[in-house]
Image (cartoon, rainbow, N blue to C red; front, side):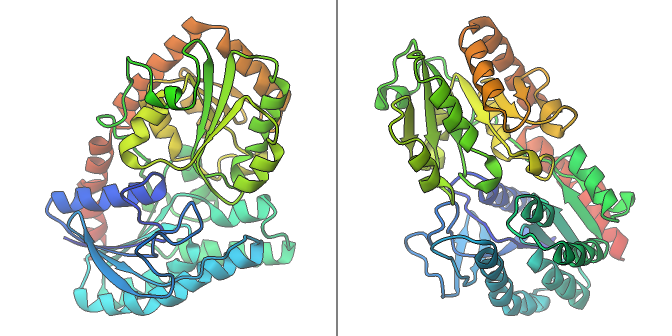
Length: 411
């Protein structure tokens, strides 16, 4: 089977959505499929094109047996709503001729990963020209998030863009997303139930697992073995609401047994560093390569998963799978009934978003209850093994109910 994937981020050597795209493509190649990926040069989450690549140059490379076609895009030095739109539009513009040329490759399935929705029309056009099955995979509801987070604000523009989004989604042969609550939102946007597919993110439970010995990162950062470490690792962007972590650190500054670690980069990084100026209970780490991820995640006594209230159930953080696989409890901000709250019923603690007092109080409670942390961590690992194993998730994706059925639907 020939599978063409259009995605902004393709970073199999790092973490996040790009890593999921890379693992999926390489897994499919290992199963005997031919896979091509059209993507941007690596730039995320640093918002800077990686060494060895150029923003304005097309290039081709082979990664793990996957044929990867890199297309130019504009990467802004600073972010705003307009700049983000131009950034995404530039990828649509420069990837369009490459995608159009793939008609001659005759793919069976064309899978586009959202964000960005900008690329959906390209995928639909190329799928029609090549008579391929069109598949949209929604990692984030970027349109809803952009307006709810204030990146875009015009009510009139919102109505127009939501109508366009719904019109596009309903024209794909299959639309998948990563959680049950997000599936419900697909239905609200007009996607027929028979065209919806649950395709969750997965955890590599063989590479991410609990370590019995203390993580080397604790020694590197000078964290005492007796200290309780609360770790946030991942993109530092607007929708995470990471200010609540800084606020909690300020409230707990007198607790010498509680240490915060912030690992990652992103658009909000410098703003967060300014807010945390003078707080000696916070350690900062840059984004870590994949071969150090397990050691990093095992540094935590508790993982932190904050989210803004207006991003609830618009995204299902990909980092959650690794947190659970590491066998550590998770402290999250989410409302009752959301997908995150349901997943963490027995493997974490959930408090309402944007309430720094409750967030800090939950940290104190977890720090003072070793047995609770141990039990929640065991439950987290059990959940990951049972429901989030990579091979199981991708095998379900490959089975007749997904890929094969999509092709049959077109014939």
